[in-house]
Image (cartoon, rainbow, N blue to C red; front, side, top):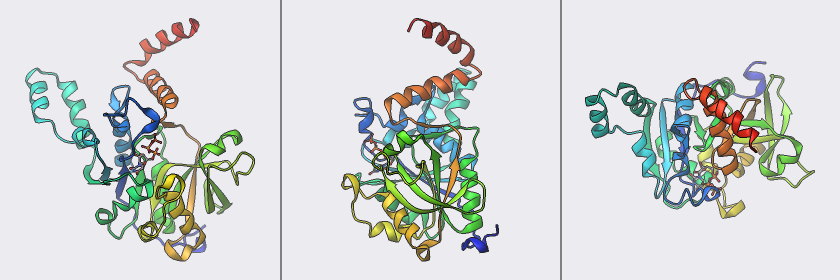
Length: 305
Ligand code: UTP
């Protein structure tokens, strides 16, 4: 299908990403009392580094972190560390030096403060001035997508071809839909791309409009900012991005269609304790350096359970 008969207009692929990291991380207390959940290590890199590497790999070279109180370690992680770097260089620890510098070079990183964490929608709205009048991506800092997947690139292609806002959708089992925001969808004629006609936040079991859950990757049109600015606090008394997307989906004249790209790969929610443990074990067991020894130990350990 062409862009025209989908009702959208072709436009430049987004190059900026907004990464909200100002949430309180209450699901991971007490670890997250003084350490941002986005800084929890997944093997040997903080979760947020995987997210910025994914953004950069998809061509999003400009990243805006929406930070808040106690989140300074995230900005430090992506900044140069002259003393540490010169010590590693002097000691000839070249591999470690390169690993430290990887985070610095990952993208052009900026930050803005949210002040009070008034919800994900409000965090995105804090990016308005930096983003300006162009489409942009939103990546949640504790949501990891398998590095082998090209989800974000596919979403950016759809945005550019259709002038649409694009949401990542994950197929979840019917007995888990009540844990997510779930999309009501219709076909577009393009494989893996659906038109979103409505969104339901955590539907009661048995009432879900589909098994397609919204996950933490979005590509949005700048028109979303006006909608967010007039979106009243919703669930949890927070300004919800889902509510603004629902408004956009209900009226395409505001900022074009809202489309969903269906993702069938692996996604890890590192903001949840059990999911975090599964993430670390999975990724460690797949590493070339640690994997062989770790898998041997894991095998032996599992026999003791
Ligand atoms: P979450 O609901 O997963 O984050 O928000 P949270 O509130 O930190 O987590 P819990 O539920 O208390 O454990 C999704 C994303 O939006 C950011 C969070 O940092 C997370 O990356 N967020 C949320 C903000 O930046 N500001 C907010 O006001 C709320």
